[in-house]
Length: 237
Image (cartoon, rainbow, N blue to C red; front, side, top):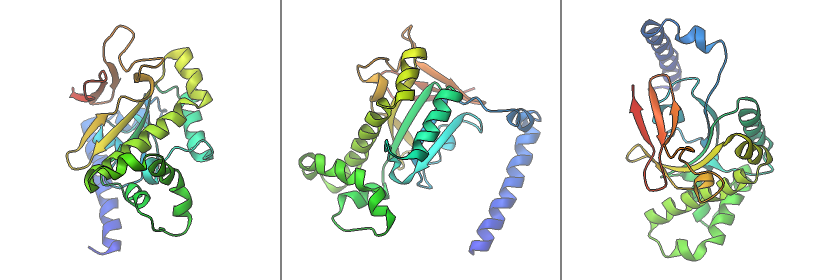
């Protein structure tokens, strides 16, 4: 399909989607236009195979989103910092989720010794640092396991940055904000909780104060964060 045809198809598909959603629920778009109150801030990779709202089974308005190459969280990146501040301080999200994924091109580039070129080498420098800090562990793994492991370690490093963010620290102390590190397996479509952030023996567990699972309610489904020994699960209503 030619590039122009892909764009035309996308516009046509949007018309069909909007018509279907409006027919299914006539109040959907008018209510959406009144404002947003998402419960999740999702920080993920720009990879086209990782569309957060789709893989979570949620709807427009449910997830506030920041995505970049290799889901890198840097304390000096004003873009990421602005998203965190707005979502945590003003929208008052209940969950901050940092998601890595399998088959990540950024992770593969960080594992190699060559240069990608341009600004990408600068951007991937933190991921290269993760590789260097864990060189011995990564060297002991096979190629596939190594690619998964560096992506997990990248999430762990990013969660550490999130936990050091002043706005996030205040929200954890004042209203029980929860921070999660997860991994999306493209081959299965499953999101796996890595047990990082507030659930890692820290100030808050992933469970609620009464021991029940943390629940994010969307328009047509619920995303349930369970304890460290169980995966997150989606319940369709």
